[in-house]
Image (tube, rainbow, N blue to C red):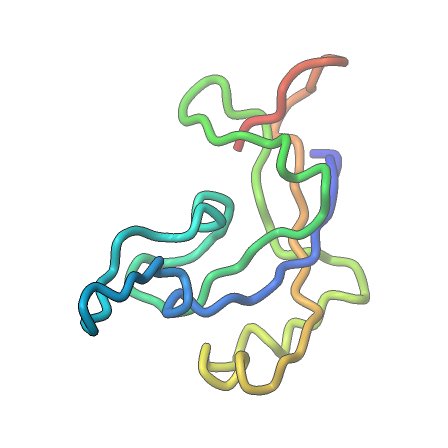
Length: 117
């Protein structure tokens, strides 16, 4: 399929996504950051990947027949595949960037049609 768009991915640490409150000297988790809704990651991993290209926020999730695009690691030369071999903690400490994804059409997409993955 044709590439719809690309996006750099910002690595984030899930451990910093909790909303905390101090109740009488005791720290409590009261929720999570809204940015989690826009990140990719496994529920048991500390690593979250946040797509930072502006147009990506208009792409929605949908299963079944409405899905018209898929995500894959980019083939552009700026994508640094060696970062995929790093452990999450190592990636956070290194502060390296260069992970890029592509949104690729899985079928013809009409002008004005919403993009779903």
